[in-house]
Each structure stands twice: as C-alpha cells, then as structure tokens.
Image 1 (spheres, rainbow, N blue to C red):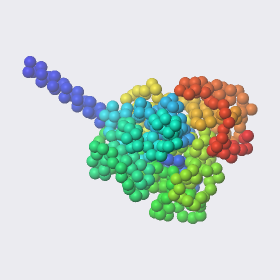
Image 2 (image 1 turned 30 degrees about the horizontal axis):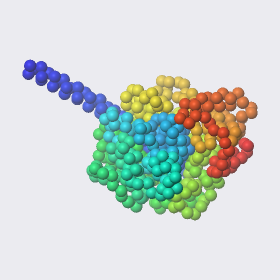
Image 3 (image 1 turned 180 degrees about the vertical axis):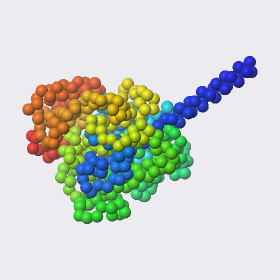
Image 4 (image 1 turned 120 degrees about the vertical axis):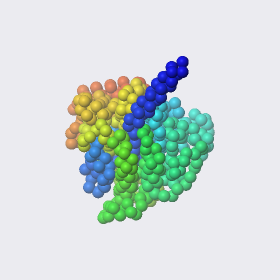
Length: 484
C-alpha cells in the first residue's frame, strides 16, 4: 500500500514537472499599440525622409513588416476593443467611442492567456473604461433624462471596467500625468488601485513602467500590452527629442517626430532588456497604430501644442488618402510589425492584406494550437512562412458612423449612408484618387452584396440610409472632392 502511494505521488510530481516545462516553452507576448500614428511615420516604410525610427526599423528587419495592414476602426475605443478581443467590435455593439466601455462579458486576450499560466500587464492608454463620451453607457446606467447632468462618473463605476477586471494582473493606466496603478517600480503589487500623479515625460514613464514589469516577470510566460499615448495630442515632446529634428518644418510635425522618437527609444530599451534576460528569441512582439493620423483637413500648424482637441497631431498618412475617422486608407491603414525570432528567422515584407484582429488569433494559435471559433482573425505565421499561399482574408469589413467598406484582394468598395459609393483599385497608383464605380459596376455589386451580408450578422444589421453631416461631411467633401 505504501509503495502504491509513493508511485502515485511520484507520478503526480513527474506530471507537474512536465506541465511546468511545457509552460516554460510558451512564447512571451508584447503588444505595442501607438496612438494616431500615420502610415508614413515608420522609417521602414520609406515614405518620408524626416522620420527616425531605428529601433522599430530593426524590429521590422528582424521580423516581418506588414505592408498592407489595417485596424478595425478609424477611432480609438473601437479599434482597441477589436484588437484585444479578436473580434469585429460591431459584433458586441462597440462601434464608436460613444459605445464604450468594453463590455465586461467580452473576453480579452489577457483573460485567455491567464488561463494558460501567463502573468499579464497593461501600461499606458486604456480608453475602454466609462468616460464622458460613453453616451450609450451613461444612458443605460443613469437614464436618458440624466444624460446631460453627468459631469463626473463615480470611481466605483469606472473601477469595474479597469484592466485589472479584464484579465490584467498588473496595471499602470494613464495618458499624461494622472495614472491608476496597482504596482510600484520595485515590483510590489498593491491590494487596491492607487491614483497617482507623475509629471515625468509620458512616453518615458510608460516605457519605465513596462521595463519594471519585465524586469520582475521575465520568467516565461508573460503578456505585456503597451498602448503608448503618442503621437496623439497634446504634443509637448521634450527638447532632447525635438533637437533630433532641426531645420524648417511645422512645429506640430517636429513634436510628432519627437514623440515617435521617444516611443522608438522605448521599443529599443524593451528589446535590449529581453535580450539581457535571454527571452527575446521566444517573445512575440507586435507593433501597430490604433488608427491613422488626424489631419484636421489641411494640416494647419496651430500654435497651441498642448491643446487636447481635434487638431493635426503632426503625423502623416501619405501616400494614402484621408485621415482618422474615415474609412479611406488614411484612416485605417497603419504601421504593423511582427517579430518572433523563434519562428521567423529572416527579414521579410508581407504584402497581402492583414488586420489587427490577426494579433489575437496568432497569439492563441501559437500558444494553444487552436483559434477560438468566435475570433475573426487568422494565425499569420503559416502565411509568413509560406506554408499557406492564399490570402489570409477573402474579405475585410468595416462599418463606422455613416460609412462602411469592404476589401477583397485589389478592390475596395466604400459606401456612405447618403448614397455615395466608391470603388477603388488599390493595386493601382491611383489607389483612392480614381473612382471606378461606373467602369466596374460588376465588382461594386458583388462587394456591396458581400458587405451587406456581413452586416446582417451584427446586432444592428444593415448599412444605413441617411444624410451624412458634421465632421464626416467635412472630411469627405474635402478629401474626396474630386470624386463627387
């Protein structure tokens, strides 16, 4: 009997050791999400000559540069909801900023990884908690009659939607000076969230908070979500970064370059630490922007650099048309780098269309060998390695405000609710400067039908039929004025 007990105990210890060994083989994951960084502003894209991103360029050289990469929305909150859940955010009703916060029943990639034994951290801009733009949530919580009276959302309401309640063990959440944190830079985890003020450079502070997490949790496996607050307004880059960009240029451009440079330095410091800890080879790193740059139509170099408004943030979307808030390429086509040295050994450029939804799918496939059935993305690794030759996505879909769009191979169909339709050949040098809706009506009909079918799967089906107004009308009348 005693020998049988010893045999059982020995078997349990062996199985436990094997399980621990398997956990130690799991890849680490870092997801870096910049804010309002246009397609132009990545040195590896070689679109503009004034950008300096040596560390990001090195990450692309040692990984994969996604040349045709998209996000699910041209605006902050829905774009973040999409990348963290792996689903088109329209599936759970979070289509625009006013539809936040991220529903508690939505499952984040952090929650999924925690179940696999990961230690998780979120540092930087969350923007998935209730705020004063969350009009849908405010109406549901306080009643439509009280909507205009709400000026401050009580802490106990906001706290329910913090990263720590959606899969993140460690949190350093904030944008400029005010942060909600549950750990310090010595690695201590607090029992309750603390509100702090820190007037250090916001990008350097977010990098520092990330480095402290990695320093204390470099043992595999970990997941770090780092949504930097740059180059989003307010601008205010430090002089040492501004000095890297001398010469005549709009001051807003200089500050955007400075903020991106600070962020690039942060990426370099993170990669260096991973190498020192011996975990770089087994770490998946994703770098993506949450949407295109806001141009304020004509990129006016307004003097109030510290204003938190809708001014141009100094970033650029060339060669693409349009800006943040639009479903033209300038609003949704973004920088996207993927590095995973253990699987992807050589510098590559991937030309086929991919989307931010692929991040969660790639992570879960590489961690568990399966992709949750509710995900809308794909594992990118087999396509990058050439094991799969076809395009990762037959179709990509968008619906935002009074706009909807679909991409299929070279073709993109864009529709406004006022009846305006556009068909673009994105493989041509004309891209979105030439509307082919009449010449290729057969393609437009086909794509319109597919887009409508997709919309019928959503809680709010359809593509809408009403006049566009406000900012959207200004954008389309300005950027597509020659196509009316």
